[in-house]
Image 1 (cartoon, one colour):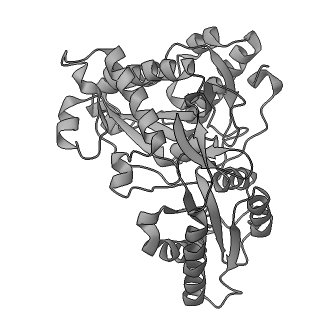
Image 2 (tube, one colour):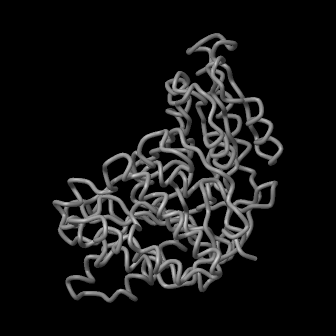
Length: 396
């Protein structure tokens, strides 16, 4: 049994962080300076840079500031942006968390806002020391998965091992979320066959077709020079490797950023904007996708890599699973799991899958990941647009 943090809204977290959230890029520096003295005390910076209104960003921020791992939130506004900070503060306090809104133009500028913000954080950290604890069953966890800095070993070792871990965690009752529909092109038929209803299967096919249209319009697939140097020559090759991290469980639903899985099972996250191509590439980096998984409630994120990604995240811990033995030897301090042992004949897929599952449970109990120990708290958000999911996406 995992000993977690009980929130007033009834949800349970595995970390007890404060987020300092800027509501426009003009508040980013102030937010960063407020958090800086408390970096090792679980105070993380997140935010939205845009000045113009965006429903996606508002939904993301509502989900992130009341995530189960978040104990309180301080909002930093310049004062003239479109983001409705008062509404977000109300949402936070109604969830039973301490929340505050500071407005730089109203509160005396940079220095005064930083001083007031640090005082609020210090007081709130003391309050969070009294957060009630509660047992968390493995089946109450939400786990996300992503791949980044991929090479051929990602699809041969790291992703299949994470897929085995996902199967084990689903068997325990957990909700497991995989994503990157732009890197699942060519695999939509396989996923549709695993959907729990034909209607969900068609929704999955449609989501991948949308991703294909999006990337085709932009003239670039979701594949990088580093992927090619690592032995991935086509998006189809990359997709088959990415697909492996979903495991073999039936697919229970299709989510969009900010949607919460209603129960345990395996879910696909559609992270490509709906409608016409308006905001550029669907995701500009892996950090953005990690944030979307966390906005769907992920307590922990599994991150596979072959070439070696070092990013972590604000709010939820990131576990690095490395498929390339040479990369692991170079970047051992950033990696958590050496899945390259599969390629060297030193371990089986099931053995590494079990190791990943066990590390998820250990991290949920409080063990630090390497990215946490190194202070990685990356976060990124941009403009997107989504329509609400339909009933076919979450069959009863």
